[in-house]
Image 1 (cartoon, rainbow, N blue to C red):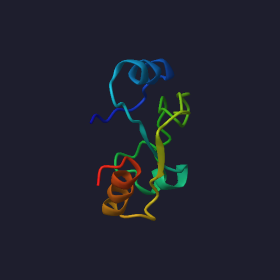
Image 2 (tube, rainbow, N blue to C red):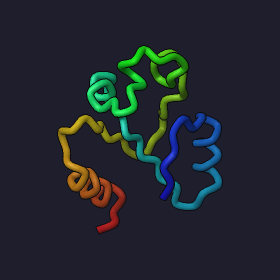
Image 3 (cartoon, one colour):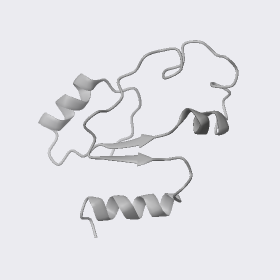
Image 4 (spheres, one colour):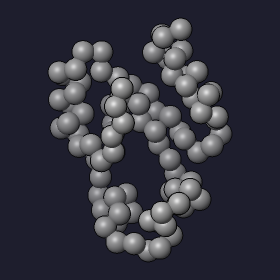
Length: 89
């Protein structure tokens, strides 16, 4: 398992074609949640060159599963959902 940010569409396509059992989990967060969780003040300080704010990014379009990570589920609930989704029980 790896965690990465700002991967490009081409990289994700390469991963799907070349990594056996590759699964992509997209942790999606609303802008409102980003502002609430903004520990480094990237979003509330009017900082420039921030991906997703004033810089474009390649949003995943073919993820195995999308998790809306806005606090409605605990981390344990999310892990349980992933375990069930990927048949790892």
